[in-house]
Length: 331
View 1 (spheres, rainbow, N blue to C red):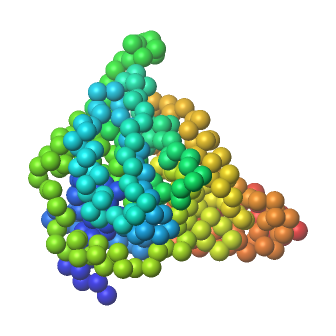
View 2 (view 1 turned 135 degrees about the vertical axis):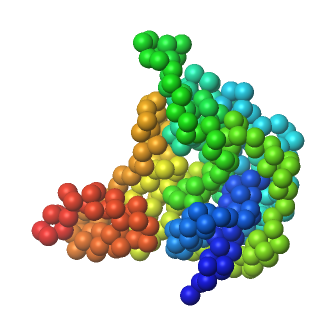
């Protein structure tokens, strides 16, 4: 049984390691109050079934790391900041094939106005460049955005005549962070928040305990059921696979092909995020391979396993997604 102190320390470690993707904010190394302790308990529980941070710390299954950096117009980081990012990753990530940081899209202000960070990321996240002569890389995405801009509804100047610009005080004070689930591979850097204090000021190093835990993690075996296929994080279970992007998942029943991941990523990018109060909706869909459809007994068994998946969001989605598929299992 983990004590309250142990739970806090474990949560801090998870925030330091799972948030290796939120590497320069180091929010997990700060001392938490009672509220943060409760949040830490939730983090420990939600992360107990997987260890995605090992994809960054270890040389296998990905000996390379590619970091894509997008920024809303006026929010782009300096070369100095990205060099600090590279130094941090080089220190804590064992990537003998190298670490590459690539600047990508500059997102127009008019496009970003009123759009929350996750749907904005889904639209612009491209993934690592194809390189058939190199091993596939682990992937990290960094989005620099303006929380104050995200809080605004589009006005007449954005082509929405008659709509008044109103402020929603939700994003402007959001700290730099990464989401643990379902896609911990993205760093949200709120330009409106003074993140330079984190990167260049207050917390330049991990705490001693986190460094020790990272060293211990570097000696663990590579995860056998986690990998990146392009930008898509894949968790493979018995008979099914969970494909993840920012607040977006696809459940695949049957054998997985790389093209399935490419199609998933392309479909997500093709969606146009709408400025609204609910554009942070969690998106889940499913794909059932023909070999599973052709075997009702096999499909029933896999569906039952999906309904017992360790991630609550998958279990909840399964109950809805499979309501139409289950009758075929009884034939």
